[in-house]
Length: 287
Image 1 (cartoon, rainbow, N blue to C red):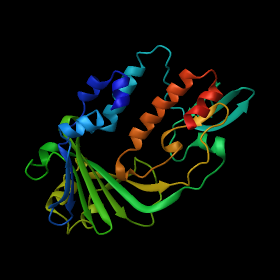
Image 2: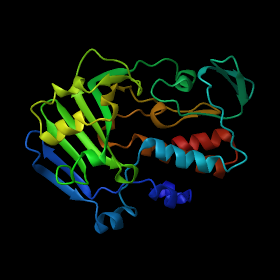
Image 3: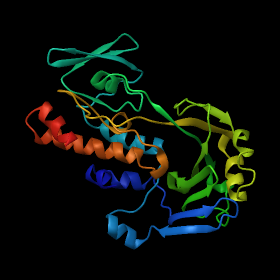
Image 4: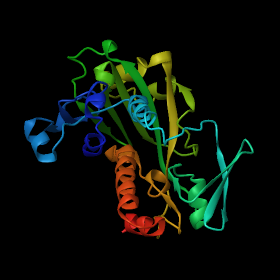
């Protein structure tokens, strides 16, 4: 939120945010609270901002809408990067649609399978963590308030846990079910599976968890494997660097991946603005 404030987007974000009242870990079967911490005035005073949760599409819309107001920023969609080549002091980007683009500075924010990372550091094998995540959305009206409190709820059980929290002004509930599961290696966020893929796995869990799973919009959930990678010794070359999961992939257990990418971006922009060369800016960014 400090980056959002610094960008002048606090009011725009507040318009699409949800505000859970706290975080609660719960017994997987009974739903009884094992631990609870409130997102109250003391929390906001300690961290300098309230705890907000967003639908990722809403956050993207706010950021993209602000960027489009800047005439120096140009969006080019439908360009899948396939290769990068050095040419003197420039870097040439090659795209799947046979188009190219030259630049004196390239920032790769292209995820754990980063093409930019491959250019900087060569191939690196991703590692399957043994955990698979299923995520879905449920209209809040499908969950009575006495059944699902307005909190960041986490049900913890043997080999599994489920997280649920409000997004989009509280109109939707986002849930993620994380399961120890072998045989799935697809990291895509767009692989759909039917909700009955989960019902058997959670048949002995709290009725609230079962209602969440069965109430998913379109009776579908998204499934992706959680992957890791050994830390890189550096992120940058003379004029190319990485941020977010391309630089330091992380599993979602602390729900900080998108936040880290935002903070990376702010620090990187500051370093480039305050130094006299791209190379020095990227070096300071890593430091």
